[in-house]
Length: 292
Image 1 (spheres, rainbow, N blue to C red):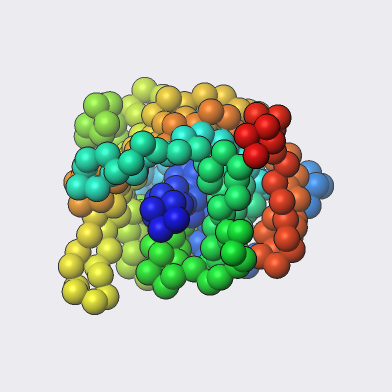
Image 2 (cartoon, one colour):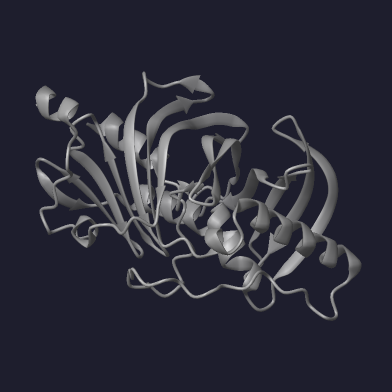
């Protein structure tokens, strides 16, 4: 069971979807109630009048990436469901045989992740709180696991493209051409008003994000850590381009791989799944029912 929870934490990607997870935006953003009404348009990041040429280039690249991802359809995603298989690694070596996972996200800060064929092991994140749910009941997420999840969500691709770039005081830096995940890429660094930074790499031809990286310092041992995420195998889903292969690296070593089987956008999620005390039970397919 402890190994299952380790896999769950690795699946999380405030992302998630890393899209992850992390598909969720920054924890500080006010929680929005789910609505089936047509979302209002969210403007692309506007160029600043007094911006320097390098910043203009960076903002143009980011706007091209947002358009490639789906433009307003991407910026106004309300909820998302993804299904697939996840593999964890330790020091770059496989850690187990992997397993099925289901992730249900509602912007800006709700995510439920379910494991096993029976989907009877889950982690739930609502705002800045996390819960572990098993047949034994509900308990609070361990502090370190919760901190790791919230950090990934804060620095997630969706957080940067949907939130960071529109905040007052943000700095955009175009850092030239690069090679990322074997793709010719354009490199842009985004720095927010708290002096936190994320570096993004966009495919030079398709403009789609191919890599994201950020550094953080461990508050205990003061060690600086590097987290990276690579996005591949993009496919169209409801007018949005979604990466079906996501690989995460920690200090240069592969730590997690997700291969998605399906992605569903704006279907309207059952709100009881985000209540840790609701007793929510997932609807299983016939194969899972027979196995039980």
